[in-house]
Amino acid sequence: MKKILLILLSLTLFISISYAKPIAIYKTDEGVSVIYPVSENRHSGETEKVWLERVFKEATPEGKEYIQIDSSELPQIREDRNAWKIKNNKVVVDQIKAKKLRDKGDRAEKIRKEKERILEEQAISNLEERGEIKKNEELK
Image (cartoon, rainbow, N blue to C red):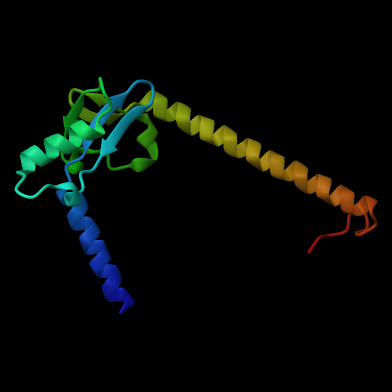
């Protein structure tokens, strides 16, 4: 039963994503915002063209332009999403920005691991000072 529900959910998600026509909005220094229209927002008797136009205008910040693209035109690899930009009416990855973001993430991970190591050493030192463990004793 779970398998059938999972398959139906996956199929529904695939159909809704493949049908959706996202728009891309360029935001200064922030990259691209993608909006997927939701069919539940479609008014009775509204044509698809009118519906999409209305949804896109409502979702677009004042003063910003949007382009309408098909979801298949978005970059397939999402890990660089924060480096997406619009070029020639297409969403592309700004490789320089993507590298900077990856490097920043790598540095943040190194800092996080170093902080964990220092906190662990401090905790062990506190346990030793209180006599709860012997110096150089293995923690289990």
